Length: 194
Image (tube, rainbow, N blue to C red; front, side, top):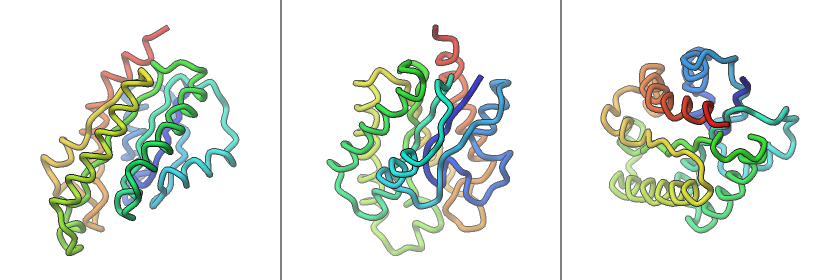
C-alpha cells in the first residue's frame, strides 16, 4: 500500500519526531508502509502546487491526503483565490490516486488562533476563527463536489489548544494521535474501496 501526504507544517509535523507526525501514525495504524510526504512549514496552496510540479511522484497511490490553507489565511490571502488553487490541488491529488476520488482524504485546517502563539500574536482570535471556518467551509464543499473524503480535525484542535510543541503553535505528538485516530476509520473505508 502506498500513501502520499500533501500539505504544510501540520503534515510534516513541525516540532515533533518523525514517528509522531500524523501521517506516520496513520500509516502505522493501517499497517502500511511509511507515507511519502511532500510538505513544508509555511507553504501556501500555490507553493505546494509549485513543489508538486518539481516532485518525482510514483503513482498511482493507494491513499492520498491533503491538508493545506492555514498559511493562505495567515498571510491574508483572498478566499476566492484559495478556492481556485485548492480545487486544482484536489484534482491533482485524484490524478495521483490513479483517478480514484474515493482514495483521497482532505483534512481540515486547525485554528491556530487559539494556541499560545495565536493568543500572544495580538491578532483578533475571533476573526482568525471566522476566517479558518470560511476556509474549511470552502475545502469541505470542494471535497463534496469532487466526491472525496473529508475529516474535520479543527474541532479536535479547538478542544485542547494546549497540546502543542514548544513553539506554542504546532500540535504535539499527542494532538496528532487524536487526528490520526479521527482519520483512521475514513482511511480504512478509502482503502477498502475497489
